[in-house]
Image (cartoon, rainbow, N blue to C red; front, side, top):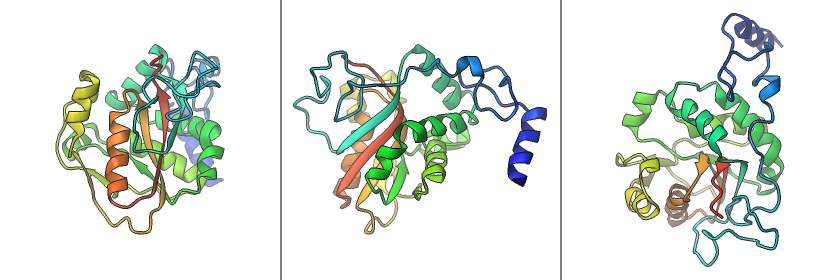
Length: 239
């Protein structure tokens, strides 16, 4: 109760920014402007049963990227389509210091994917890590913020110590699919004991080519984790 009053007071004097329009949120205590609530396009059926991408053809069960391809994760889901609106929002979230957006993002993830995540009975949520130099420059790991918010809402432990970046990589968005795979090769390492982890859910902001998620899943499975799933805020439409 006291924390709620404190947060509302902060919102009055230091209003949070809307993750869509980036203006001050129109009503104190809200996470997004009322007129912006439907700006992001939520992924509905049909979607790929492997990675969660939106599908245009309801006769399909998997997207072109997953059909006939070996993936190291069991299954993944996404909340929104990664269109221009969401892309601009996430850019500000990652590079513009808008860490407050994580509150709305994680709430959307809990509302849309919470039931599915709970059904997996995960031992932990594991965010995709940043290299320490990039973390120092940015001040936070966006995937870590999403995982923390989601873990708190779902009552699931968040393990920030399991995956680490052992080498600095080129920013993924500048690379093609094969370049991304090579870029991540051997960049992810296990940072702590995982013997008690059997089912985990990777958390990240977006799923585009899948290289990052698949590399992380491969690393975790090599360490003995049986079931690796993932949940992201947005997924690119590749169909």
